[in-house]
Image (cartoon, rainbow, N blue to C red; front, side):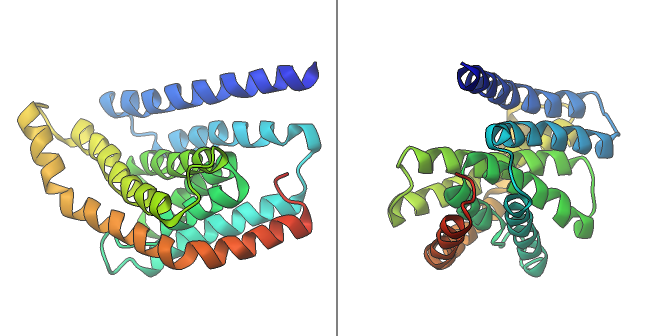
Amino acid sequence: MQDKSLSKYLKVVKIMFIILLPLLLVLSALSGDKNYGLLSVIFMIVAMLPFFLRFEKRRPEARELVVIAVMAALAALGRVAFALIPNFKPTSAIIIITAMAFGPEAGFLTGATAAVASNLFFGQGPWTPWQMFCWGMIGFIAGILRNAGLLKGKLSLSTYGLCSGFAFGWIMNLWFIIGFINPITWQSILVAYISSFWFDLTNAVSTLIFLLVLAKPWLKKLDRIKVKFGLME
């Protein structure tokens, strides 16, 4: 009975998370809110809720949290290492791989944490919570698709990598449009998306390349670690 109640509660939390967090970001941009640090902290707290609730029944061990922290650090360092090549980075690929190995909640937390950690080098600002949402949802959706058996082959993985690269740019364009374009018209929106096409294409292609290179060997090692230490069961 308790398990069923927890399961229902988790579903409610996820629905609220998917609906309310984008709304929070949009309202913050429209109101000209300058409390970016506070918004990021609130975002991180809400982002962690589904993750910790998911493991509430069996009390997650420190080693499980360490794995997530390590993957988030790798995703952040990957972004920093390829900073000289605009939008060409392994960050999304590492987040997707983490989600495929450990599940949607782990994927989201890795993506959200990687955004905050990497922006310690690039600078925090109004873009930080949007990046947290984008990378978090890339991981979250990847985990859901993997659990549904839809990310098994190279073709499906490559397709998702390309789509996630473009989706990241398209959502970030919304922040740019809301925050900097006045007045907002269909023409200005079209110009914004056309202008970002090559950046979005570079991000999508880089995600595809890094997935093709890293997914098989990394998933093999992560699955071995997962089985050996009984992680994310």
